Image (tube, rainbow, N blue to C red; front, side):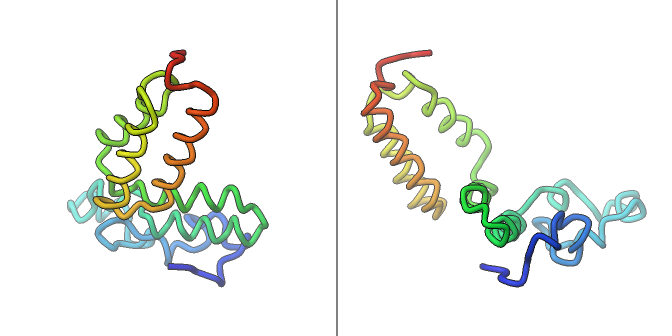
Length: 142
């Protein structure tokens, strides 16, 4: 989803576009207040960032001609629903010398695509696998 009307004037969204930012249960920032917290109407799911919010941040970055930052936000938007334990496994494999060869990282990329529809992250991991191969980072442990 793209929000073409978002610009640098909307940044930060949490202050300038509270109507657009929602938690995982759909509550907007406007609906998160102390009274709701006290009654139990707000929980941690309401406070976690969503893929949609990260994509909006990417649109703002793109409007400011910051393509690399926009790309990072879009990749991050794919990660919010991936279990943290699996993300830590991926992180560990990306450390030099942890994966034994390209096939381990390619398997991660395939799982990101098939299980989580995280295509941009899969491309990132595949690119990392190629660079690690070129630089000999599968055998060097730091």
